[in-house]
Every structure is written in C-alpha cells, then in structure tokens.
Amino acid sequence: MENTFPSLPHKRVRPSLIRRFLPIQGKAWLRLLIRLSGLSLLLLAWGLITGLGYVAPAQLPSPVATLETMSHMLGDGSLVLHALSSLKRVFFGFGVAFAIALPLGLMLGSSRLLRDAINPVIELLRPIPPLAFISLAILWLGIDEWSKISIIIYGAFFPLLLNITGGISQVDPVHIRAAQSLGARKLHIFWYVTLRAAIPNMMIGIRSGMGMAFICLVGSELIAANEGLGFLIQEGRYMFKTDQVLVGMITIGIIGYLINLLLTTLEKILLRWK
Amino acid sequence: MLHEHAPILSVDGVTVAFKSPGQAADRHVLNRLKLSVEAGQFICLLGPSGCGKTTLLNCVAGFQPYEGHIYFNGAKIEKPGKERGVVFQEYALFPWFTVEQNVEFGLRVNGVPAAERKEQARHYIRMVGLAGFEKHYPGKLSGGMKQRAGLARVLANEPSMLLMDEPFAALDEQTREKLQTELLGIWEKQRKTCLFVTHSIQEAVYLADRVIVLQPNPAHIALDLRIDLPRLRNRHDEKLLQYQARISEALREGEREYGEHLSVITA
Image 1 (tube, rainbow over the protein chains, first blue to last red):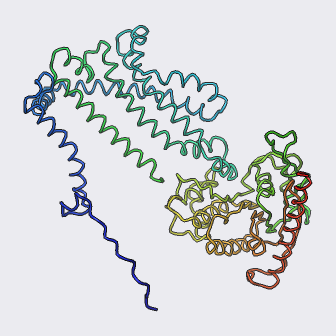
Image 2: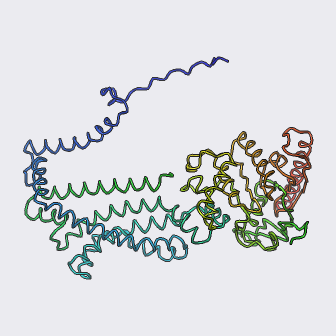
Image 3: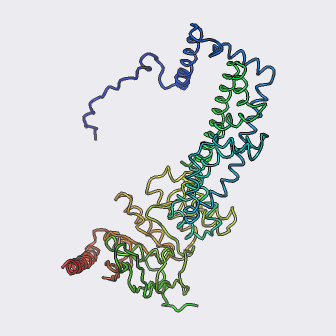
C-alpha cells in the first residue's frame, strides 16, 4: 500500500534570534558561549563603570585591579590559606549538622507522634536567622573556633532536618507493602526502601544546607577571626581595601559554584534511576 | 499432611468495618464473609468498585486487619508473607532498582546467595518476556513492561499463591489481552493458586476456573460460578458469552437490590 495520506501543512518554525545571527545549530560550544555571555556582560558593565571614572576606586576597584590583587594573593599563598580555613569551618559545621540531622530526621520521619511533638519547636526556631544567634554564641562559647562553627551548624541544620524528615515520611506505602509481601523485614525495608526513597529529598536538603553554611560563614567570621574569607572581607572594609573585599566575595562565589557542581554531579549519580 | 480436599485458603466469618465520619455506625465493607479456595484454582473476584473485593484481597495479603478467620495452609493470616505474592495495580516496582534488582529483591531479603538469585532472576525475567531489559530502570519502561517486571518479581520468590489486584486495569486493551494470555501460559506451567481481582467480566471469564461475584454494602457473594472451558479460550466462544451473560445478570440484580436498599434509606 502506498502512503496516500496528505502531508500535514508545513509549519515554519521561526529560528530564535541568536540562531538567526549565528549559523551554528545545537553545538555544545554555542551553549557555552551563551552561558559565558551573561558573565561577560557583567564584567563589561563593571569595567565601564570603573573605567569611565564614575566611582572612586575605594568604592569599587576596576576588574583589572581586582584581578591583580587576586593573583597577588594567590601568588603569596594567602588566599589559599584563607580559603582553606573557611572551607574547614564550612565542612566541619555542615558535617556536624548532618550528623545530628540524619538520625533525628530518620526518627521524626518515621513517627507521626514525634513529628507532631517536635514540629512547633522547629517551626518557631526556623525563621530566626542564624546570624541573630551570634551574640548568644559569643556568650556561651566565647570567641574561639566553636562559636563560629556553631553558627554554621545552626544554619545548615534546618534545611537538612526538614528535608530528611520529609523524605522519610513520604515513602509510598505501596512500596512498603510490596517489600513486606516479598518477605522483607523491618531492617530490609528501612535500608532498601525507605532510605532510597528519601534520597531525592535528602539531596535537596544537602544542597540547601550547604548553601546556608556558606551564607553563615561570612557572619560567623565576624566573631574575632584572623583568617578566612569572611575575615578577608571584614578586614578589607576596615582598611579601605575594597579590592580585598571583592577578592573575598568572588572567591566565595567560585567555591560555592564548584561545590554545587560537585553536589549536582553526586545527585546525578545517586539518582540515575530518575 | 493436609487432607486431599482441604482448602489452601479458607476465609471464615471475616468482617472489616471502617469508621465513617459523622455517623454512629461503622461502615461494614465485609460482613461475615465466607469463602474457600482449593489449591491450584484460578479465582477471579469480580464486582463493582467499592464492593470490597480489594479489601478482601488485602486481608488475604495481610495488609488489612480484620475480624474473623483467614487460614492459609492451616495457618492464620496476620501479616504479609512471601508465600502470598502480591501483584499490584500500580506495579509498585522500586524505581531505584533495575528490573533485575527488583526481581532479585525477594530472594535477596530471604538470604539467597548472589549467584543463585541472579540465575533465578534471569530465568523469570525471560519467562515474562523481558530478556534484554535486565539493566533498565522501571521509569524507562511502558506500563505493560512494568507489570511484566512486577509479575517476575513475585514469581521469582516462588510463592504458593498469587494475589493480583486489578493488575492489568491501567493498561491499554491490546496490551491487557496479550498479558492475560501470557499470564495463563505461565499459570499452566506452575499451577499456582491465584486470586485475581478485576472489574472486567471479559477478563474474569477468560482467565478463571471460578468467578466469584461480590456485591457491596456489605460485601456478599452474589454468584459463585465455575467456568468449565478448556484454555486457551476463544474470547468470542458462544459458551464464554453465556457465562458472561449470567455474570452480568447477577451484577444487575445486585444493582437493583442496592437501589431498593437506597430508596428505603431515603424514604
């Protein structure tokens, strides 16, 4: 039999603006170019504002000057030291928060009663910004490392706890039934079903917890720090070294971006079934 | 040893009542239901939605607490168990496991060594026609393939009874008919006792040795019909159509009864 169906009226798809001007279609490097364009635009605006002399260098140094300071601080190793000491705080604080949130989240997630009992406390504490605890942290823990880390722990804790609890409590009951009727015991169900079903939510908790840890970092280093990226920003402000402020900020941005990239990759591996 | 004609499953005086909001009396879904099933029978539980057929299946599966007695191979059913394998309407495959890992799951939690369970899983995956899809995740499969995997997962565990809760209801007609035929092929080989819940008369008469028609409020058996036809059956066979007519008659009578029952209440 011949195909005698009339062909559908051909609909002309208008190429997008960018594609009309750039003759390459769907290439990976085109996407990279587009991705870089926003960043270049920002840099261009920054360069223009500082280059035309609208703002004093003490208020906003030029991109070139900032880059020079950055490469200088990389060269003498100081930037790496500051970054490492901040990373240590972030990871330690996040680790402690995770170590508390995981068992607590597992318990809350599996018991409705416990959830009802604890939820009001959590909902009351959650809206208080971690930085509001700085005064208490100093009073209770002094001005050494622990008071800084405690702020980070506090900040990372709630996103972790809420998402782990949510993930555990939202396991599809039909999966539990299926496992039971295949002969699984409680521990099997926990390990093979509940925990795995909760991983998508847990990853959300880990990513937003990590984000909060970085947000709290700068604040925590307001407490009598003498190294760290937050300290760099603080010191730069006191000493009118605005280029140093910017270097601190940019470094935090880059590290945050890289960690998020790492977590997204981890998520893709863990959730390859999605 | 069991007596030759001792039923593999006996349901006796089973009552399930749910609290209904705003009413003093509980709503009885099942009320002193009685039923016995011989080993090797293929039984279809048929009835309109809300008639309690799934509730009954859930009692047998051990998911639903009940009053009364349900004995399986002489032991009272109190919780789910691997000797009663369940195939769910919504497949209930673990999405984080591959087809192979899903099929192996029962063997794994029951302590079968890795090499042995791999071999057994492959055997059943081949049996349901999923060879080549071992490493696929359920999310990438069509509905029909998902249910094949669900069936393989249960069969690999070698239960003595299959409980199937409208397993093909979510599939398109062509896939459904194909799976019905293949299920019978597997069943002919294994002769496992099978309790199959459906709301389709055609499906019931095509598959079952015995069709049990349930009517609601509370569930009672309106018809218990033996289908004495050799398999595979022709879906348009005169005799099969006669069985269908008898069943739909029983269903209509129930409707009438239920309608009168309603008018009494509203009067």
